[in-house]
Amino acid sequence: MITLTMERLDHAVVLKLPTDHEHVMVALWRLGLNRDPHMYTLGELNAVFSYDTPEEHQMVRLIDMNNSLHFALCSLHEMLAPPVPYAQQLRKKLQSGSYRSAKDFYYDMESLVFDPKHMMTYFYFPVSGEVVAKDGSVTKADDDMLCDYHKMIEFAMYTVQSQTYFWETELFSDVKGVPEKLAFAGWSIEEMDGVLFGEVLLMHLEPFTDEELEDLAEKIEQINSIDFAIRMKHWSVLTDAGLLHLYLCSEDGDYSLINPDDFLDDEEEADVCLCPHCRKKMAEQGLSPDGVSSTGRMEAP
Image (cartoon, rainbow, N blue to C red):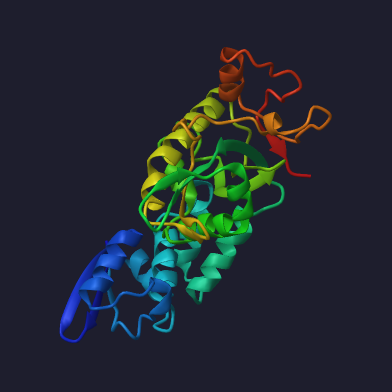
C-alpha cells in the first residue's frame, strides 16, 4: 500500500492510495486549504510517501516534488491500476526501472491506449438540464438553452472526468469479458440538429460480443445514473437565467440510451452504430432499426 502524508502549520493528514477527489479535497480542507489539487505542488504540502513493496518504491521514485498534487495522484493511481490489456507490460517496465519520471510512464501508457489500430464503439445517451434562478425557482432547460451553452457544458464534462484519478475503463471492471479488451473509455457532449446529447467512446483491442455490448449498454446507463450523477451534483454553469445543472438522462429521468438518428431530418443519416441492447429497446418501442449496424462497433481506418 502507498500512503501520502501532507503537513502544514503543525497539522498532518494521511491519504491511502488510490483515493478519490472528495477525500483529497477533505484532506486539503483539514490543512486549511481550499483550492483545487492542481494548484498545490507536493513540495508546498511537505508531502512524504511511504510504501510496502519494491514495486511501489519504483512508482514513488518517479514522482517529483515539483509535480502538482493532482498529477502525482493521477500518476500513482494509473501505475497501481493501469488499463488491464497493458497492465502486465507496464508493470514489467516499472519493475525494470525503464522510466525516469511519471511523465515517461504516462506518455508510454498514452501511446498504447490511443493506438489508431484500436476498434471503436459508440453509445449515446440523452442530456437534460434545470435552471435555478436567483429567487430559487426551478425551470427545465430547453434544447435552445442547452445548445447555447454547449461549449461550457462540454468543458464541464471534461472537468468532471479530469477530477478523477483513474482511467474511466475502471468503471467497467465488473463487466464480464470487457476489461481484457478495453483500452479507453471517455464521455463527451455533442450537438446535432439543435439537440444536445452525450456520447461514450470505447476503444478496444478485440471485437465485443453481442452479449458484451448489451452488458456495456446497461452498465453505461448505471454509470450515468449513479457515478456521474454523484460527480456532477456540485457542478453548474452560470447563465443569464440562473445556474444550469446538467443531468445525463431525459427530462423525465429516463437513463436509457438513445439513437441520434432520431434527431436528424428524414433526408439525413447519422454515421452511428447501435448495440443489440439498443436495437431491442427500439423494437420494443415500435421503432425500426433498419439500416442500423447490428455489430455495434466501428473500426478505425
